[in-house]
Length: 145
Image (cartoon, rainbow, N blue to C red; front, side, top):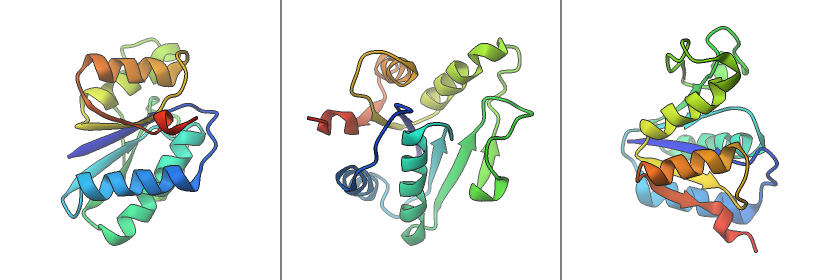
């Protein structure tokens, strides 16, 4: 099972969102093998990674994987993740690398956990791509009042 995350860079973490995300993982993944794909850039990426680390403490069959858009520019220490994957998008223009990386993450995921609460930006574009690909989506942004 593969779970990926997409959300707005300007995101404020909340206890409510953390509880909802961890409960979703418990119900969806449980003790099964799973890979979690992280982008590693904005605030939602940090939040989802921290939730993934918490979940992994009690579920050792989970792998936390950084999906990097640039083959020669790592953005985090390698030991923070169980692995780093480069999706092979070197033939794409570098200025669109994040877009192509995000599409790759969605295409290879079974579930997309999102925080999207407005209709513009990269997270929204990725969310719309997941909808188009008919992925199972859990959007924490709908909790926003």
